[in-house]
Length: 552
Image (cartoon, rainbow, N blue to C red):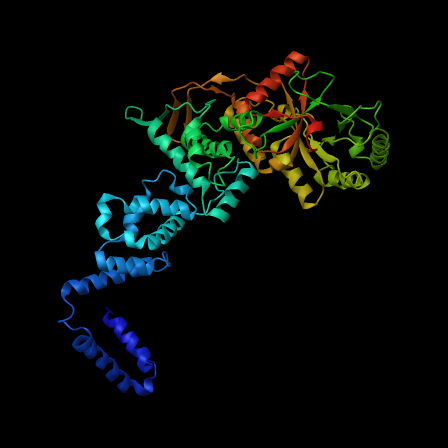
């Protein structure tokens, strides 16, 4: 049944009435009034339509308006069913969907057909005439699923491997399944079950106590059962470890504040073959410095070599990192064109004799009243141009240590300097990258807030950091049973070995899949190097030999 507005609109079209034709104002008014009279006297016949029928028609009109843009294929079926049974079949079916554990993974007609068969067998609704509408119901449940499935967003997942993100993106594009949403729902279920929230009125403090041990768990979140139930789905087959990883990511980053476990967990999954498409995180390409070998389980075929003239005294014997340095305060190679030219010539001859290095490091020159970034880049661009044919070489500037105020500072020695140098290099479209000597950068800094302040700034240009220098001088790990965030305290029933503030900050700085060469600084023995390597492994770093990986 039409409303009076709909009836008048219909008659207007039929009689081609134009209410904006002011020449026929009187005739138009008479025609509309006639339509209103016809509506109430002829169309709206009280003998044929009682009050309940009119009320039902009005309700059906509201339902139609509500679903007009969201359930296009099922709109007519929903309205007809509503008029016949006075029931919103779309709402009934939507409520039923919640009882299906893996509804978020449904994608095929078989999924929806099996679900509708069970739905129609429900004793509570067997008398609602559903059996004769199975085809319409299958279409409806598909539409409901599509409407409830949001497009996966990368927001909040910046530390996930690109291969995982591609898997999620491709799954949604082909099957309209949001794996982020499914993993997040599983993580939330465990949060509801295992995390206790307590408010202490005496201290006005909120506590979140995690009673689930997610670390080093052979079957976290019951992923074995989830995979067994869903491995027939093409986007799940062979991806058990990857699915587990999605759930773990949401769990440690969103619910229990254990993000420092993430890099270690990823590397553990990769090294044990738990995942198929994910790569290691925080990959370091170990470089031998001063002849001190790494532990047996860390292979290294690259050496660190220094020169002040550009000339090499001996064959490095394989892959090598070459640092162009200078003696004490004598940085004339960056301030005298003649000396720079001789150094470049020596470099070219060394590369011709022994092959180019994997990376050429440039030790930062000293800043002076007449020597700033502008003068440095004027000379650096000459070096880059002369070495242009060696396009496989990574060229990086390494920061100098903090200096006493009485001495001139290095052109690049603070975080602010690093950001400025890299920004200028990018603007000038030069190849120059950053080699980060972390121990020198954080001299005289010894607490978490200071580390965090430095590394948070550097994290914005982590992709430009190609090398890492680090000495074995930082606090060891300790047992800490709580994490403070905003006005909440996060506790774990199981004590996890927490990283020192320093190691945790370094791990968080990188937190990606890029490969960076690693030079152990000031390490005096194999025992010291083993301790340093163990600390880095515990912080979620992994070591890969140059021969097995591409150059950085």
